[in-house]
Length: 319
Image (cartoon, rainbow, N blue to C red; front, top):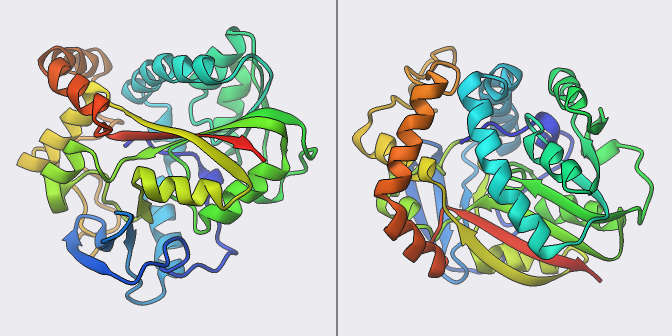
């Protein structure tokens, strides 16, 4: 997983495991690399189970996993992956929204924001990491260096609101998207990207799925993501999945345990992975991704057609 920006940290908000889905029937998904989850038998949403104080554990995990996200996001291999992702995400944007004033929440290294600006969109980003904000600023993109929850942004001032791989981290997804709705102009477009609980990689990997990690409070399905979008001031108009070659590489790495991954119950908090975006050689890593893309082209095409790609995208319009 490409590290998300720090703007998803919401330490002041209370959250309960029943905060998104109110269905009564659940199945346990225990002892994953991200701890214990439960899966709704109705909508398929997967969310973490509170063992002690979920909020305290979540905040601790964010500090452990993303405390150094400036380094991880700006590592050469991470930058190459981010640039690759930006190309196909720009296609999603151009298909669903004409140029207008765009807000990206949590821009990471800023490749998508830069690509959108080059395509004619008036882009503003919000990022509370000073290092990442400066990196995005150097790409010529406007940055509000503040937490999303407390930033002083004008109401009804954005035509498009985008967040890639942020919503699975937030304590209160409804509150997050409802706040975004207050910043949206009438008929504004919302684009939300997040890991897909129905993807082939996620289902085949089982408890070893890279989508399970402590900072991922939830792994959404199309149905559960539509519910959250629809209850937050937006009309969900479309959901679809995408899949990139690196998703299958992550699946393979987790499945054969080629990359040691931290178990929150046993691993020392200061033990880094043996192989990570900060240690992989960028040219060789991208060569591996290109090779994986060729090998997995057909299954990825099939899974995307069936909604089983490992990235889930929801499109909404402001009510």
